[in-house]
Image (cartoon, rainbow, N blue to C red; front, side, top):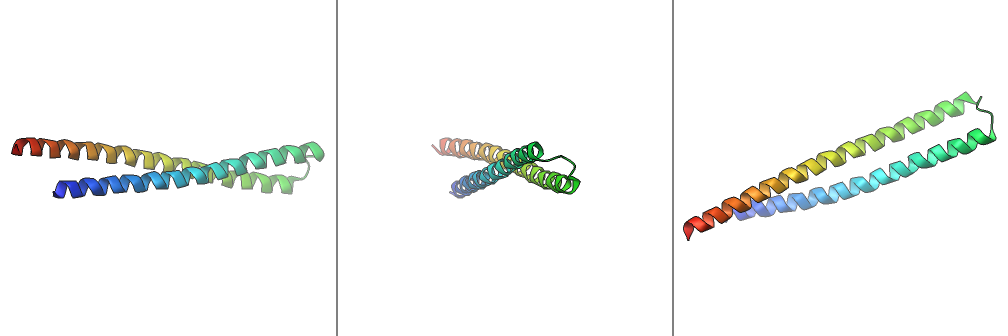
Length: 107
């Protein structure tokens, strides 16, 4: 009975991780969109003006760098969550196997 409670908790944890991964993927998509928008805006600015405006260029590049950091962070977090999900699934399969073996041993 206690094993079933543990198994239920692991399933619950897995669902929580899936929700967290979904939220992070959504956040990642937003940052990727921001990055793409920034690149498009930069292209438009460069085509309209002379590229001698170093202050705007520096600011733009710094903003781009920050967005890239956020994208990288979210990708790493998603990768970590996916590994945790795999580990949880493995633990659940092991518990299920142990429970079945225990039930078969009692019969």
